[in-house]
Image (cartoon, rainbow over all chains, first blue to last red; front, side, top):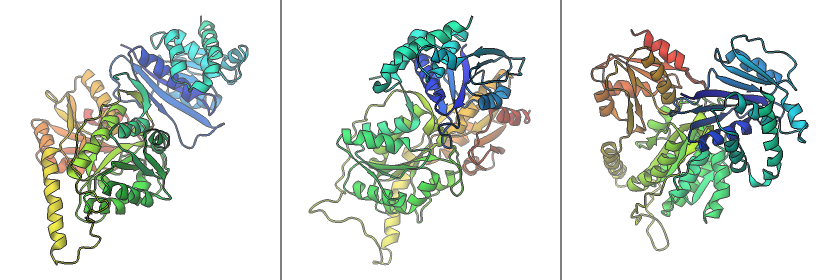
Amino acid sequence: MLHEKIIFAGFGGQGVISAGKLLAIAAMKEGKEVSHIPSYGAEMRGGTANCAVVIADDPIASAIVHKPTICIVLNEPSLDKFEPLIQEGGVLIYNSSKINRKPVRTDITVYEVPCNDISESNGSIRAANMAAIGALLKVKPKLASLESMNTALYEGISERNHKHNPINIKVIEEGYKFIN
Amino acid sequence: MSDKILMKGNEAAAEAAIIAGCRYYFGYPITPQNEIPEYMSKRLPEVGGTFIQAESETAAINMVFGASSTGARSMTSSSSPGISLKQEGISYLAAAQLPCVVINVSRGGPGLGNIAGSQGDYFQSTRGGGHGDYRTIVLAPYNCQELADLTLEAFDLADEYRMVVLILADGFLGQMSEPVVLPEPSGKKFNKDWAVGIGRKNKVASLILSPEDGLTKHNYVLKEVYDKVETEVRKYEEYMLDDADYLLCAYGSSARICKQAITELRNKGIKVGYFRPITLWPFPYDELLNASKGKKKILTVEMSLGQMVEDVKLAVNGSIPVDFYGIPGGMIPTPEAIIERVESYE
């Protein structure tokens, strides 16, 4: 049974809360149970932000994530904060473009993804979150398909930003391909 | 129409209010409920309604008083410290038997506290934060769908009994996004010949000095309504209680943590279920007493130092031991802590 507890974390402005929301919409479109809780309030652009997403086959009891099964971190403070919390046997995807140290845990599966480099080489400096999403969908294909993710990009983003979606989709695909 | 939309709890509540026919919203910003006024400021003008960002919480609740006295469906929302400021107005609305909906997306306290979800406002909500002999109906949703459904229903309850209906949510629920199927309006019609208007008599007496027992009589009029509500409005959910040895009792976000703990405890062979009050006033005393029969112990779980636990004890009246686990100040109990406590009973 699918029951993944996911934390997206990074600097405010890196799009971790949006990425989580889009993933939740994509999974919801496939009939899965989803929840999304942003960390909010004191965070601001440049500060750290994170969100907790649960995707499951069965109805979600608690949407609060104490021990994530999957962690996607886009900056180093988030790696420091969340690496110790990941459930044994869980997955860590980290943004090697912005994080200089290596993760230390040996009881989890670690994927090193240069999210900003993937984004920039596809013509945007702002789609690092999409590269991470792409990688995640390859590592955990049961969460959602690339097609559902593309639908989510149009339904979950306000219309004035739809013009960015061709690049978003390209970056997701490149992130997806990056994982072998 | 039955399409699921991923909505924040706050947005789901706001849209449900509009579906219920609420056309007047008055509020003052405070985290973590800001998406409600934000949403209302955009949506109300689209449906011919009025949104006013008041100069204070006190002003907002008194604007609700004005709108409600004309018979219009109106509401306000805030978070704990702001709800404290509204108490005087809530007491006045109760005195005048005016219907309205107040949403409290509660946060940690006392004082300015913090901005994380908390359940420290149970006493304030159920015992009347304002002065005088009055009651408010209190509804406690535990997910975004129920928050939307109960907000819709709150307007009907308010009109039916001419009472203030309080929705007690918390910061986690307000900020959380979940798939929501927006509810359909009930279509119920209510006679509002009590409403003020041109050529109508003012029904609101500001001060009842004569006859000497005038206020007493008015209090008994109110009591008659409250008695009726107590027999007619009881909502609760029972989960896996049939074969359970232990009964967890929790409302709102805490109940969800309990649900997860129940799954894990049952995997370990410990039979446990929960009783979740949905109306906090009227509290489902008789129903909880019945549910507790044959159980070994009740564990009440709250995001507070222990408030609802007093109603749980009133319900069972010493017939079964009642334990408490809680964490105050905007922290969330972990399923592990609940599991550990229940395991200690074995």
